[in-house]
Length: 319
Image (cartoon, rainbow, N blue to C red; front, side):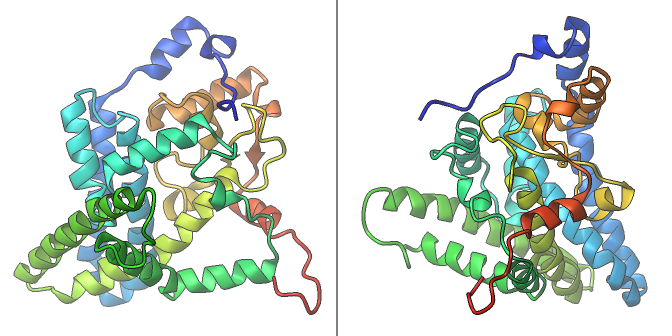
């Protein structure tokens, strides 16, 4: 199949607008990394002071853990720093490894996703192809996410694959083992450092309550919501303005579901080299030019989930 269709920035923006939009800033990119870790640290400190705050801080931390993955994704596009070595170091060790991601493996994989978005060669197609599903099926997935089942299965498989367990011999076996090792070992190492640091501070238990629990529960849910919103049930996946969905998000959704402009995914696919902190401005300019009327836009995460779970449940047939 040919690569996914592309658009030209000059068809949507003036040269001056594009110059401003495409300008990259270390302050904005690395500042977002500092923001993510600051929110996590303050949430932990608040809960250590008053444990009942965990009802609030577990979702907040879980969302910032997704934020770390989003920032690792930004590093894959070279958007955290204009200095490539710094960009890659931060992307790998400061935001990637703590949440189980390997920058190099992800970058190779993700650029294929952009090249063949929603085509048969798209490596992410399996995330969106099953939709729409029934509301009952979606509820089961959400329950698995919030009870830690999804996390346990993913980590078990990742670590097993790192040692070649569960991988059938054949073409690509070594590559899969290498990719699993590159993600699993830094993840274990980074989490050991986090546990050690919290232990030295006298709050070893906070690693389990305020890092592992959010990662195993809320983070799994919002990661699924992100994947569904971005590419599931598109109206015309061959149209470059509809190969991904932008989902409107209010302040609460941005705080608990969609950190760091991750909801502007249609703009990201249209102009993949725009840094994440310019996507909102790009959306406003596209809206002012009347282009958003032709883009895939969701009116909120609740509406997108309704669309994703719109398949009818036939009595007696497993869904």
